[in-house]
Structure formats: structure tokens, C-alpha cells
Image (cartoon, rainbow, N blue to C red; front, side):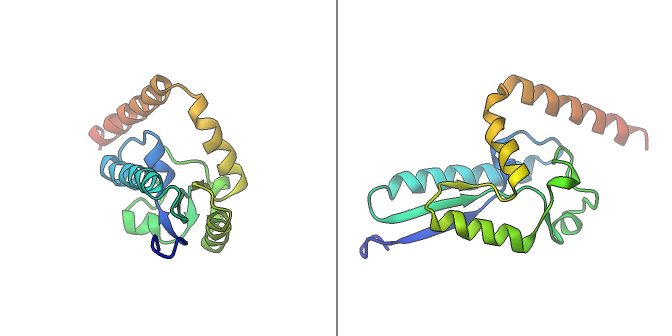
Amino acid sequence: MVKRRRGGVLNIGSSAGLTVLPNAATYVAREHFVAGFSEALRADLSGTGVTVTQVCPGPVESEFDQVAGSAGGMIGTPPAFFRITAAQCAREALAGFERVEPRVFPGRAYWFVMKMLPLIPMWMRRKQAANIAGRLRVGTNNR
């Protein structure tokens, strides 16, 4: 692609790689890798004609929750009204890729929330995640 001076890479990650999500450390770590890898690759390929777009979906109607063992969704994820179909996610991902966007957040409501996330100080996000994690530990100990 570099030699041809055109092409692109579309990485599918998750918005979990951009925030703090309790009770999902391994998942969040993997998604942070995708975010960091995409940013570094974008920098490496800058000016070559090869683009890199990272897709960061929120909740998508799929079998993900069942496979992950969290039928109700992961703790700390947005409410159900943020859910979009897999088809909508794919359409918006490809559209963002074609517009050469560095990062795509499929779903209008979810896009808005994720664009506002950097305005919330990290200490507040950490505190919220710690509070949720504490409630989860208490709930687990009562079983």
C-alpha cells in the first residue's frame, strides 16, 4: 500500500479502549492496545497515502454479550437505547473510513457521548469506575 501510495487499514476496537470500565480489565486492556496501535500506525503512515481508521463501537446488537458471559451487557456500558444494529455499525464504519476519519463512533447518540468524554476529568471517571467496582464486589460477596 505504501509503495502504491494508496490504501487503508480499518481497525475494529471498542470505546472501552478510551475509558475506564470496571469488571473488564482484560477486555479494556486489549481495546487500549487497538487504540494505541491505530494511533501509532496512523502516525507511521502519515503522508504515505495509506489511511488508518479505528472503529470504536458502543453496544451493538450481536452475540457479543452472550459469548462474553454478560447477557445483560458489560458493567459500565451505556444504556440499551444506545444500541445499534450490526448493519448500521458496518455502514457507519465504512463511511467514516471512506471519509478518512481517524476514529469512528457508530450511532449518533453514542458519537455525541464519546465526543464529550474527554471533557470529563480522568479523576472523575476513575472515581465512578471504582464506585461501580466496589458495588460489584459487595454484590459478589453476598452470594
